[in-house]
Length: 188
Image 1 (tube, rainbow, N blue to C red):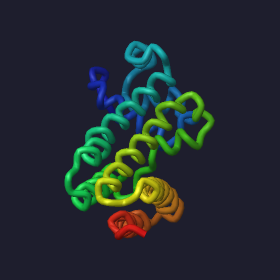
Image 2: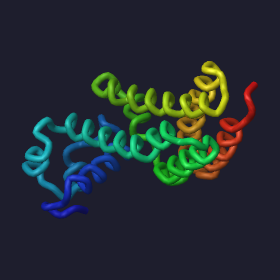
Image 3: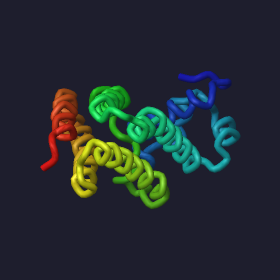
Image 4: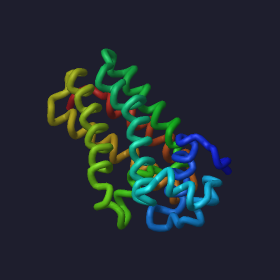
């Protein structure tokens, strides 16, 4: 639980976990105040736009983490194998080896999808584009690179869902291992 003077990043982290656990729709003000330790007045002072602003800022925080730790390294890498290994390690770290769901994916599936459509689309599109660019630099054709980048996102997201549904984080780790092999395989 956070103290009333908790830093904004801590508040956003707590909000993110509430949204992960209950979805945007199920994240009640009671759950939010319990998780952050802030009263309603303090929350509305920090987030005058209410729950929508809270979720928007949490999504922006996630986007910032992925920009720094996933997208930019993929765009700037000279060594595709090291860049893919770093991406896989970052994804494994961020999603706690499959124990943490993708909040952006959860929002994409929920009723709030349209409210956050731009943020959700940007998250996936930028990731796919950065990975496809790296794969192009590794010698794949444009279409092969696009297909493999799309497959990577499908694998990661699907593995997160299946690992959670089956309560088996090993599913996620195995999927990441196999994905690494597929991404680095010679062109078709």
